Image 1 (cartoon, rainbow, N blue to C red):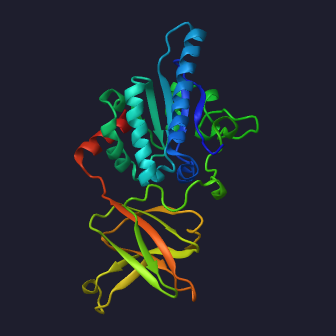
Image 2: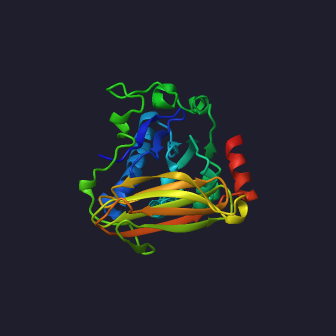
Length: 322
């Protein structure tokens, strides 16, 4: 019910067209399902594609053994969250090992600024033949897709003409609703998912604690996750300039993520911040609004460096030019 994506039509060469979207509540899915159930769901998707390949072969009287994928990466940043990254890495290995050469073409659309980092993380698990079938499209991606897929065979939201029975251009009635959050009452677990490396701290009443992250490369990505026991907490991120960088000899502090209260006792908070400048970033856990209750908090933070190596840039340039 809370998963989106699937087969939406057929390409001009007869191959099934699958829409893969990142706008799903991956955190909610992994909190409300066992990992093996999420894996089984993805395996079911693969088997449905195999059945459709067989059906197309019978319909057309020619051998159809490839699929075409439109991969919308509008919300791809959540793929960098540790548990989501681990399970997607597992899927990449599984697909290469058990469904080799099933991909015909993959069109990546709405690629975010962090796409080079995503590519560097996942490319080691892809065969060279697979890499050559991936194309990163720009703002005119609708025209490129229409060269390979008739417009009535992919959603109107992506430049086609297909809608579901309710007239939805995202075809939610066929693919499932994008962006639908898993209700917290369905969660099977509390705290952080896979929290072996989480740090636990106590924050007293009317108290504030900070965790410093030294960012040396502009463009690095700061990933964070935290949960509390029993009660909410306020959280924000500040960029702190050292004293020697200021005219008056005092540190300056700029809010890069404004402090707000989060119901992290009900569900873990997960987020990312693109660090546009180098410096000391401080995670601020603020309990100063509470005059009577201390909080027990679990947090995890990870810094992913900006990707600038020549090999990654060359591969992405090839995928764009192709």
